[in-house]
Image 1 (cartoon, protein in one colour):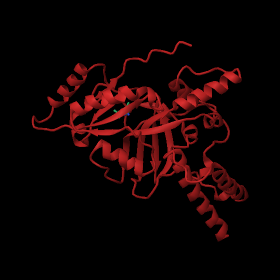
Image 2 (tube, helix red, strand yellow):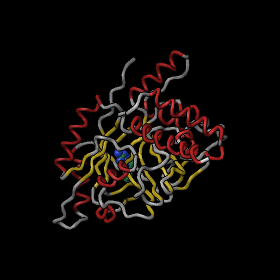
Image 3 (spheres, protein in one colour):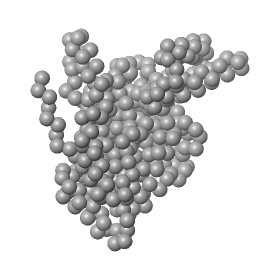
Image 4 (cartoon, protein in one colour):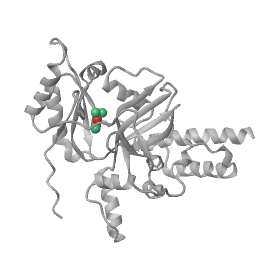
Length: 323
Ligand SMILES: Cc1c[n+]2nc(N)[nH]c2nc1OC(C)C
C-alpha cells in the first residue's frame, strides 16, 4: 500500500541523513535512542515486506552469512604506492624533478593531506549506489571486501544529491581512530582475547574478517583521498576541489587537508601537522603532497611504481610506547 511504501522511503531518508550527521559530520541532530527507534521502525516494515528491501537501505549495513573466502578484483586503474621523502632536501629534490619537466614559468600549487596509517581501499559507486569495495592488494588485483566495507558507518551506501557521475571509484584509507583502538584493546584484554599492536593492524584485521558481523563491531572509519574510474561527468580540474566534490556527495574528507600555494607552504604545513601529530584523533605516518592541478598530474605521469606528481613526506617512526 502506498502509505507504507511512503513511510519506508521517508524512514530510509531520515536514517541516511541522521547516519550522515552522526558518522560523517560527527554532529548528530537527534539522540541515539531516537535513531534506534527509527531503525526499529524500518526493520519492522522490511520484515513485513522483504520484497521491498533495497541494497542501499540503512538496514543493510551488516551482512548475512560469513564468506568462505574473498574473491579477487582487478582494478580498472592500478592503485599505486607513493615515493617517500624523509627530509626537506628530498622534498626539494621531488619538487625539482617535477619542475624540470614543466614549462619554466609554470606555477605549481599542491594539495597537502595527512597520510593515515590504515588500509587503502577502492569503493565503486554505480548510479550513486555502493556496488563494490576492494583492498589495494598488489596494486593491480585486490580482495573483494564489499560486505565488510558496507558495515563502516561513515561510508555512504548511497551518494547524496544527484549530480554525481554514473560510475565513480573513490579511493581512500580505512582506519581505526585512536580512541576506538584503545577501547577495542581494553575490551579484548578484559575478555582475555588477543590485542592489536597498533590501529593499522586492527583496521587490517577487522577488514579481513570473513564474518562481517565482527567487522561491524569494530570502530572503523574512512577518509577519501583520490578518484579512480570516473564515467559520465567531468570532475573538477584540481585534486583539492575534487575532494570537496566527494565531500559534497557524502564521502568523509580529512578535515586537515589543505591547498598549498608553494613549496614553502608545503614545508610549513608539514611542520604544523608534525607538531600536532600526537593530538590528532587518528594515527598518521606522514603527509602526502600532490600537484593540485590535474592537467599537470597527467603531464607528469608515473615512474615505475609511483607518480612523479606526489610524494609522501614521512615523520620519524614514533618511539614505541614501552608498556
Ligand atoms: C597511496 C596514497 C595514499 N594517500 N594518502 C593520502 N592522504 N593521499 C594518498 N594518495 C595515495 O596515492 C596517490 C597516488 C593517489
